[in-house]
Length: 378
Image (cartoon, rainbow, N blue to C red):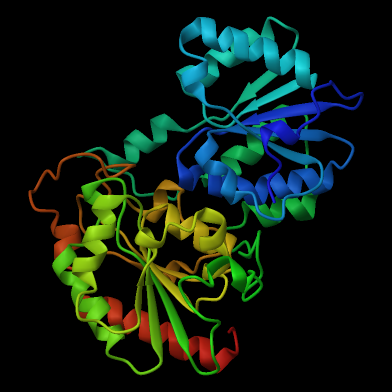
């Protein structure tokens, strides 16, 4: 499990120490984990400290021994003066020699400046903002596959002089990189989710459904989503786990699953990310939006059927190891109109989502189930 701040010795170590920062969002932190694990295994003589927000620590399951997770409450380090204090603490307590900034926002830019003044070598991710604007602009759109976030992270480590063996780098860079970084399929501890479900029985099919995303341009309409949930809830031997976070999503899940047997409101259970990852490793498939849940599925070795609206897999945020054929999307000239799904629909009403029939999603999942059974993936 992740080693928290108070578990990290408060003295600098003699070997090289690399600070890696990715503060948010959940999906972006999840994307970084396969690479971080590979880097730690390849550089066992280097100590790595991953700086992030407290809510992200549950992602770091089965972390390498030379990786420590440092959750920081940034409300204690407000403004430039606060970040100056944080930089001083990091350099003094942990002997940071290299800082790899995988976020490149104002907060981490200031940390780069302040650590650099203390003799720390600093590098940062190239987010590719120019090519992303070209991909989402209204006119003369260039629909090309951009670098994945994992590749951009890998390049940042390369600029810091931290290089992976060729085979490991190739695995990370490959769109078909195998999932299952924290758990192999079926390997998550069942006691982690025993309060919401007994262990899976022979012949039982578990479907994870994550109907939410951060922005409206990525959310499949609730009425259509309910059709999907009702379809699978009516199938014998199917148990559905619905994922969300917060009171609003708890209540929405209740509405989506009303009257449906064998459904579990995971938002209301509030088990935490670690327990949810364990559960996902036992599921047979996930239905998600372009959201963090797709990346959590990859970490747990779970195939995800994903729905794409305003965003597009070409932007480089597709889940590691996920089959491109499992991405459900409409071929529309206006897509993608946004990298994050946060722009208002230029046409109005998000037809990129509303025009996807529930039956299309049902058949995609059902087809995948048949494929899995035929090929003994599960």
